[in-house]
Length: 528
Image (cartoon, rainbow, N blue to C red):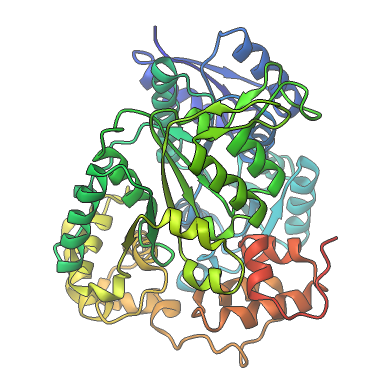
């Protein structure tokens, strides 16, 4: 039976969804449903629990609403900085006065992109349809003529007589469809209930580079794959810790079984508890009929990957240690334990040994996780791989630029790129290549590439000298700052937001626990 996929959209995105869905008629039954929020939730639950749909797709605020409520496989249509840059490039052709209304957060590279394109950019964020309408109205009052945003935002802009550019790319929609089909296939063979469960096919050969450090890393992955020990993967942000974890799983006898990943820093404590341990029917208000298995149960026979484990609360660390020691898990609201069989992989971009010394991480759990240790080298320690990585990112960027231009860019830029510190590591290099590909469409002379990256090649941010008048400026500074400078930025943000941790976490795009850790010592930290 072909996968049964339900796609929710009531906005301008529906046309793109309908067009792309035609390409999948041979491999999936795709139904477009014009419902949102509570109506979409009720419809999805009915279809899922009557076994007439396998996976659901949604976008924007509707997708976020369903993600927090729906106990069924859900794929969110994502946008990234590259999608935004493409949309802004199109908007710039319409008018010099451009506005961007994005869901919940502002993309990091917008300030640099606006300077490179000489775009006077006005940004707003929204969470509800009312927020979106208010944001578009404010932009109209400022004289903005063209708005970039979600389907909801573009419809509102058009109602107000403004031009509108959809923020979603065709590639983003295709990725969502491919992910939904893959999840539906996995569900048919393994009973997947959440999109966090995946059957991965990454191997150590997906690590790009020929440096001695990468060759050693590949060898270590193969060794860890052959031994069914817990593995702790450590490395800076952006080095590829999850790719390494997936490669270990694929190299192990557990390959073909579930690979279940969760980011411990991205969930509140209550959500983390239900995701990890599951719950029984009636355990709390909103618990679904029949209860739900947690990730340890869902990974039966496979691998659990806990990313950013250093941000796991101490109470959960105690429960995790107990699960690892006796191989059983107890759901919320249950009086009995269930036997589980899984391999644990964990990752952290903070030094867990230091966290142990500071009392933020259990020493016994640290030793239990650290049966095998993989330290991924930062990009600055393997500059000989930067050319191969940059070439790969340029070739795989969905921008139609000639190979000659790509080669000219690499010839001009590589001598400089190999000397940079790359605090964001491979993720940062990928973003640089994506931005370069977009700007090649606009600029005729790639040898002027230095002008495209004032943030990359300019002087480093000096925290005391920076002008931090608002949270956007602090967020930009935080993304560029060294580890030593980040605590001061967090403290300045806490001062700006009167010590409200959640507002600082939202504004800087980091977890609450990171705010607590970096901002410790503040006299006033208000959780309200």
